[in-house]
Image 1: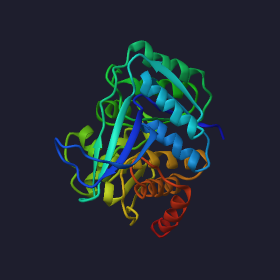
Image 2 (image 1 turned 135 degrees about the horizontal axis):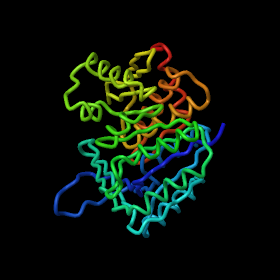
Image 3 (image 1 turned 90 degrees about the vertical axis):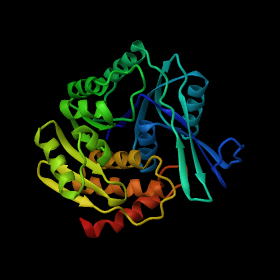
Length: 309
């Protein structure tokens, strides 16, 4: 199996810490600080490697923070290619407040990307040989909303499969142009349809509508604590959210899409791959801050889902 390529246009140096109480104005003393390489595609690559697969991460990064990101990727043994940008990579921060049990997430919009920079990423993708490409995360300022459409064209020329996890206008463009697998949250799908999807039947009907257009082969809709929905031309299934103590939601969606894509690449049927994705998302929720899932947790949670298949 060829390495799964991941693409991240808006990566981050992800910092996380804990505090007794988060106050305004006064200094907030933090503990348990950690730094991780972050951003949708980079997180997906980390999870693929954790689950025994091979990945190759392509991303845009610049400035001193971009150099820090390189160092963090080197520490975890990631294989990657960095497209250098003039402006610095964003630094995000997650703070867990022990008093309330709440998590505060501070996420910058990201640097402005020049046309020559995002085009360089596309040109590099043209050089690669792959069967699956995961394009995941937000698009930073300066990148056209149609960017993932250009990625789709490259993937099609290679007779490969595109997996997309994004939101807003870029998501709408992908649903119109097409992809093998797309994973919106219910809120992101509501944004595309311009209406509230208030119950299970409305979510399922919206998913069927997307797949019936013939542009998207597999659509999964994550519902947070209510689980997730899988829709293909031949199948509509829902799985509950595994009952695990949630410590942090950071990276859960990235873990979901990474695990599901890896399983599809290994030849699993969509329903089994879907369950693997749900398990990885739940396993990431077990970890603190910006830490992602552990293989042993994914495996035992996956077994808990067997009765629902």
